[in-house]
Length: 232
Image 1 (cartoon, rainbow, N blue to C red):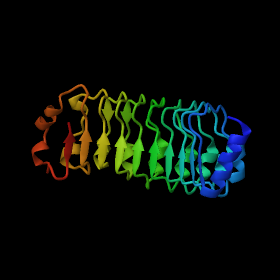
Image 2 (cartoon, rainbow, N blue to C red; image 1 turned 45 degrees about the horizontal axis):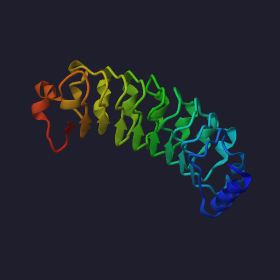
Image 3 (cartoon, rainbow, N blue to C red; image 1 turned 30 degrees about the horizontal axis):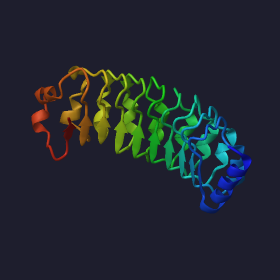
Image 4 (spheres, rainbow, N blue to C red; image 1 turned 60 degrees about the horizontal axis):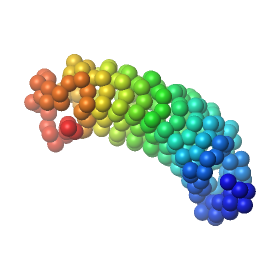
């Protein structure tokens, strides 16, 4: 992209607070954005070839939405935890396998999407994000859903298309849990999901059992269909 075109984008962003530059083959985060750290509210750099986010990313104190899907990120800088007003963070389709602990400092974060990365473990640092509404970790290689997940107050957690074979009983404290196309046996489903559960929607199609087999589990007959729904 030519300097004149980038300059035009920057001038527009200075007025609108929105910077969108997608599918331009960028290999680096635009350094020129440092000039707009004080007023940018939305940044979208999807479908580029960016490998590293610079430390100055922490200077965007007004940013509320940051999307950088389909790039080549393998890690995030610790400075990302400085984005105190960030509400939406979309990082789908990168090469991430872990998150910095500073992500736990994003106390305004409502939506976090990490679909299509390389996580093999559930990122435990996320469990301090009590205000998170939606967490998308689909299309990774996660095998276990740990007990710490119960600390999340998220409305929806999407774990479709992972390699999950083990669920902690604490998942019964979640509201919407999507577990399609994993490696779950019927014996892997905690009975607490039926007997003492906050779950309103459980999506388990495409695992190693027929969904109708859940009807044979103890406690199924006590479940109110008004408060619990199997997504078939």
